[in-house]
Image 1 (cartoon, rainbow, N blue to C red):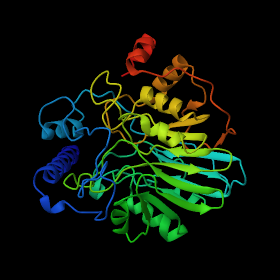
Image 2 (cartoon, rainbow, N blue to C red):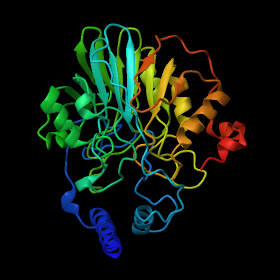
Image 3 (cartoon, one colour):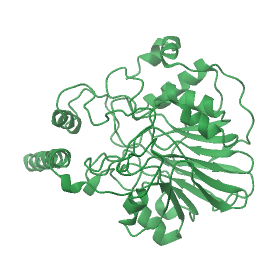
Image 4 (tube, rainbow, N blue to C red):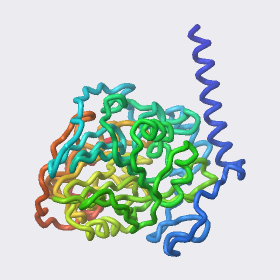
Length: 389
């Protein structure tokens, strides 16, 4: 029986490899044009979107060699990555149904999914409740259950979808949310076409576009540095973004999924007003030993600099500890973030427990902090922090 199970497991693994190779090598027919309108030429060439601050080739294997070999080593866990736990216990606390007025409560659901409650609005970022993040159920599996069970989720009013990668755009979850709550779904250009495949309407805007929610509250789609694809061949057919939610008493900033690029996207977001809460990714930054940043993902050092540029008074580190996407250890992102913020003298930027509703303090101006340069910070960090896997 044990031999049969191993044989079936090996066959499924080979099938996954074949599927990955097939969608990267063969299928021109899998390309799709999600957006056919016009957009400024600084990030759209008439067919595909691009980063105006430089484009990284995120499809190249990080350590050289063939793409197929990289995928095989990743799927077989033979690439020297630190071991992750198979399961992480979650002890959720039910969030309130509503939060009135200026009070703000944030609950980390997992990965980039956060429930933010304020001004009698329930706002959900990049909602993913599926067990795996990938096409046809093939992809990284959750090591932690969602911090809020879907049936315990309060009625959602607004959903922010940053881009079309499976760990951020989960069509199954979006369909469930639409059928249950009919929320306003705001995203960036082209993603409405992808979301529409699930029979779900959404409002797609270019960078700088605004959507009014109610008096005193609106959403602005803002620039970040990333890329998009559902099947590799459709690379950059839809735009990626971050978001500013303008709120009385201080704004909410959600970075989506982003690399550093020129980091000026943080300054641009700060120009829309004081940032009370910043949701910034801190994981999936290491694709080789000792690496501190990837082209399309910021690590704790660059996240800390983005937080400084935003002038935010509170921040939560997300995009870690749910789906294993890269080489760092399970708890390296929060441990490294704590070391970086201490070394930099930053306050209020930390991680929170899954499923633990967190009161966000009222906005207060951040004290001045010197710019955080990656190389200088690496030299300033304690050896124990630099030795984290």
